[in-house]
Image 1 (spheres, rainbow, N blue to C red):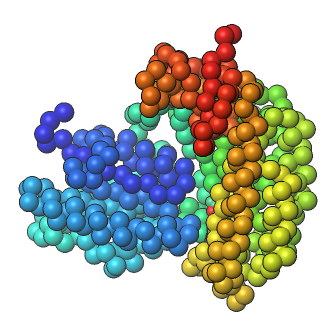
Image 2: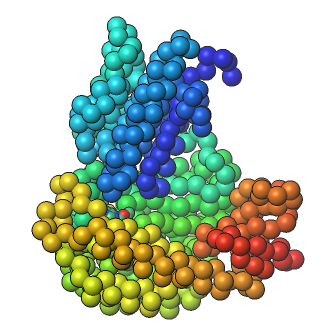
Image 3: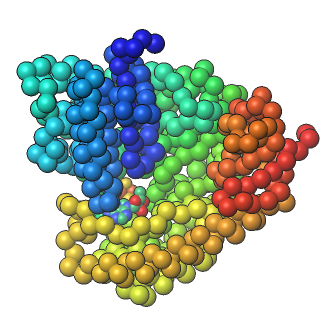
Length: 456
Ligand code: 5AD
Ligand code: SF4
């Protein structure tokens, strides 16, 4: 590496889809001579890959942009000009507004146009030649007819033995609170041959666990490689599990409406498919579920949970919950608490409802006051935390499989993950990294678990 090596700092906000996109942007820039850095001080290019799902995440971008500007100003003294790009869902939703609020931004690209980043950078460099202190202000947020996946280079590097593979994007479900259908666009499944090619590339790079990603991953569908049959997510999972190198498969995020019999069956027969399901419920009140346009009832959800448990008795559930959706009464909230008591989630992500511009729920008049949302969230999170602790306690004394991922903080220690994504610490050789071993869980320390290797 030379002193003049260009470096890119990418900050990823929000979901795993954004983490995947950030990695792909890094790969696309490698061809242009950029190396990734974790340190914004040494960057020539700062990319904020943003999330629009809640107002807090969205607004954070502007404070981070202010910091990026400081990096640019400081770097003039070092004889360089730092380029600033905003990508992701805020870029898609706000487009030119970003350049209006932060005129020093050079490039704004949506989630479907980030494959244009290398050429946009060249354009931006030309635009700022005359006045490097001004932003280039280039905005490209259309939904192009071409798919970015056809233009991105193959994956160049991966961090560790567990990797994401994006198989589906966008959403047509139109939940009334959600911006995703507007920022990511309509549902789209990647062609199966491309997915298999990418999986093979991940295998070459040493990956042992693949998480299939999609905003609505269970809506995935595609023509089988021989062109004779429509494949579902379950078919894809069964095909991927034929690769001997792949030890574990996961998928995220699912919609209860899309859970067909074959994915339930996959959890019964496919031993590489982890017994863990992220199934956002959002609310336990039928009235609120209807207003959210989720198109299932709380008892539909509980039935589904039961079906998965019947097929795979050791399955655990994770979920997303929103409190304070417009019109949510105390009774509705109690229904949510009751549903949670019944399911007993191993992990949950819970949020206060945040009105998003352009979504139907944002204009409902019966918005819930902030202090009521706070109180509900507080009670909800107390229950969810207790469920997580109970779940973690429940595996103490059991022997479970662990895929080792990295060395631990203490000498001689290695860390891996259980089927339920819990970090498991054991004393063991670094040679075990990338291998799945049986571990007896001995204790819980906070959200980490300790264990010992079991002689097989
Ligand atoms: N306010 C609060 N939470 C939201 N989510 C999506 N939109 C909103 C919103 N407007 C949550 C949902 C979703 C998760 C990714 O974010 O629970 O499943
Ligand atoms: Fe948003 Fe609903 Fe689509 Fe999920 S299913 S991305 S919450 S619209």
